[in-house]
Image (tube, rainbow, N blue to C red):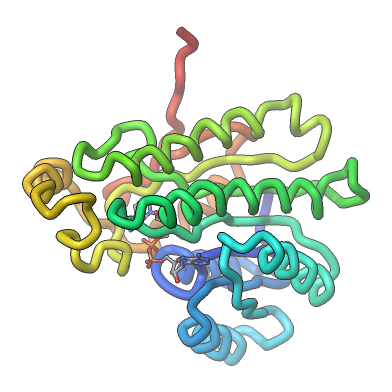
Length: 256
Ligand SMILES: NC(=O)c1ccc[n+]([C@@H]2O[C@H](COP(=O)([O-])OP(=O)(O)OC[C@H]3O[C@@H](n4cnc5c(N)ncnc54)[C@H](O)[C@@H]3O)[C@@H](O)[C@H]2O)c1
């Protein structure tokens, strides 16, 4: 799907990769972008920056916690009331904190499930919608788990499976909603601020150093440009690695 003229809803869009998604979607001519984030202060700040750069008619900020189904549902309703419909949903909100693993699962995995189900409900042709595309944010650790963060890795692996199953032509035929996953490798952001407090036990830090020893940090802007390429060329159910500033590479899976 080409971005020009489309309406997009991006979760976790106040900072980091999601912020770059919102900026890039507007740069590529999106008609409307809804910045959805739990962080009201950063979300409002970004709203004002983007509204003055692009026009306030093309940007919306919705304070939204993806762990709260009713708030998330209201966000879809507000975006549709503002822009008329939604074409693209980017489920991007996430944390890395295995110490608060129940919250981590609720944001990273359940949040993406909620966002996917809401997209099917509000965009599905079977529900009176126009169809569209969902882009779920997994990670390179979704298929190459980090020993140092097993639970974070598990949430990302589950997103890959969710996307491959819901992205199948069976579901696309029913709903008209295509689903793909983007798997960024190490990217400069606030996701990892104090790793010692984000691993299940501080003693896992040596494993973290081994897991990340060969990481080359890319910019969030590169991930955002890759998102646009994936939206334009990716087939439903496909899973894309974006790592080390390289172009997106489709991951293939064999049946066993
Ligand atoms: N940075 C990396 O190296 C990297 C690599 C692979 C995947 N990812 C994934 O990319 C996504 C974005 O992460 P980032 O690196 O930009 O980190 P980030 O911390 O800069 O951004 C995450 C955003 O999600 C928001 N958020 C957190 N909890 C939320 C909730 N309950 N409801 C709504 N919004 C919430 C935060 O306020 C923040 O704006 C995450 O899913 C992350 O797992 C990041």
